Amino acid sequence: AQSVTQLGSHVSVSEGALVLLRCNYSSSVPPYLFWYVQYPNQGLQLLLKYTTGATLVKGINGFEAEFKKSETSFHLTKPSAHMSDAAEYFCAVPNFGNEKLTFGTGTRLTIIP
Amino acid sequence: NAGVTQTPKFRVLKTGQSMTLLCAQDMNHEYMYWYRQDPGMGLRLIHYSVGEGTTAKGEVPDGYNVSRLKKQNFLLGLESAAPSQTSVYFCASSHRTGETKNIQYFGAGTRLSVL
Picture 1 (cartoon, rainbow over the protein chains, first blue to last red):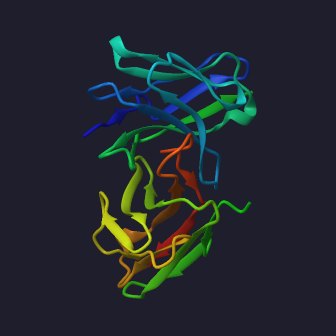
Picture 2: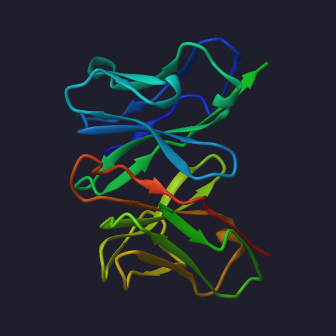
């Protein structure tokens, strides 16, 4: 079964600095990969979705993710952090016929003014 | 569109009490899911359904039951609540086919405390 690993349960960056959140998938190239964002006291919402063939995927709020097969990675980046980016971010991969998702353990992003 | 609606938003139970969490979606999604979220553990799948009248176990199904009598509703039941079931519960739904296939849409969550 596919799994994803998110390195760093907490990441802090200064406002205006680069945001880099790491996600590695476990084995064979998945057909899809997702990044979700969860703002305080809310449910998860889709940030971006990778489909086979793409390398750089653009999402909402200025985020993007680069798929690197050689590194089995799908890291999330944003060039300049904003206070409103403070949230928890989850990477996810489909499993078992693609009707289920397996989520990473999440990375809480804190923005320092 | 309301999307995915969960009721109630908060609940406090005593050990041994029962309750039902309701999830309703208005997007005509075929698939529906119940997750629990605990600190440091991400989201764990409790049960899911691929269609009306069908349910299946997820990663952590013990102590929970589900029913999907109507396509738009997915109920999660706790027959005898335990303190270990204190958590935030999320419902999600998704299409089986099409461009939004596999994209799960989430409700706002139910915060449950079992004393």
